[in-house]
Length: 81
Image (tube, rainbow, N blue to C red):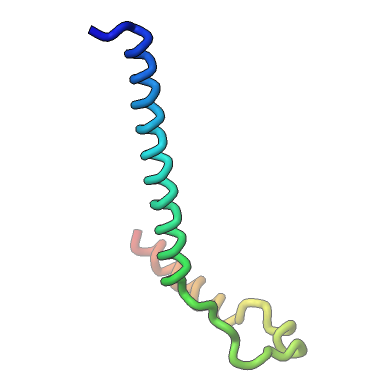
């Protein structure tokens, strides 16, 4: 039978081995996930032509016809319920 000090030393060795293996596994896992994310990431979409500032700033409101259509749809839905 081993003495208590030998068992403690052996248990610390096993503990360090286990913690080292977990650290190595997690490091490889993180690097693999980052590599796959980098390799298969979607490409950014770039606009084909620049938008003119003059007409874009004026048309930011909602079309009055669209407001009328949405209002009519809401009234029909409420009439059914």
